[in-house]
Length: 294
Image 1: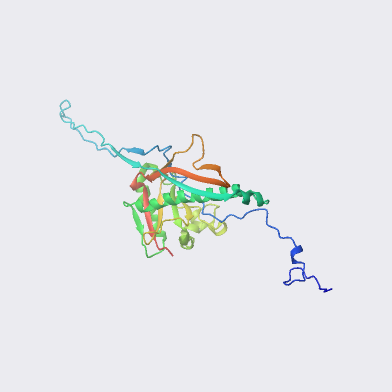
Image 2: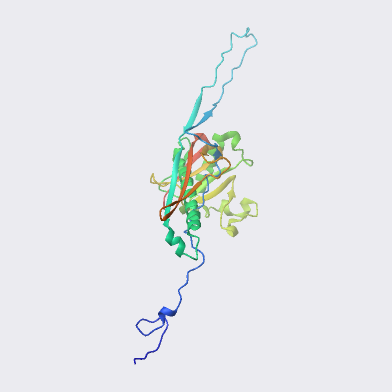
């Protein structure tokens, strides 16, 4: 009778490899997802229906009258020209499907719940990417250069243009100007001494410690990998929240994203979707900040 020594884990016919249990972690690691930074901060338009209309009122002019003005013959009355912007909704969908046998066999996991959580993050990211793409719609105010990194002057120019265009909605020291920076511009932003130095900032949120410039010179900063780069440049932006608008067609009182779960033959299906419209409301309230993409 042949004999041998059992060596756990070794190859061959005389080992105890099959006797050693394999184990899986109790938690599924979900791939990291960029957090939404803008879609939740802009103007909420409410349910959009088939199309949402945003009526706009422009500026008015005044007339200086003379002391000899007789009756009403010297006044010219005008009405506000009716203008509006319209947004048409779109439906973003993430459809998932897994066989029931997978759910039965994956004893350590709640597969459907894990898929749902992961898909929800990516759907919210897609919505945020749509909103971030609107940076290229700002044509009145544009700073920066597609071949260069953003510098202090670009940020301050953008702030000046946004506060000058948004007027009462961007009062320095009172209202917030949002700045969304492309991920690859972070190192250059953190290298601007006037933004990061506690001597200039005058507060306890020192980026040298926190690692990030949350606020500086009246601007509130966020970073994102979802900044639009399709035009040969990174479309960073500065804006006041009411420059852009978004509205969701969702169940009353419910979240902005909807989940449909169904059983089809031997499959479990999970469908995440959002029906929403978004767009630019006031061009002068925002600023496109061009930078290199690397």
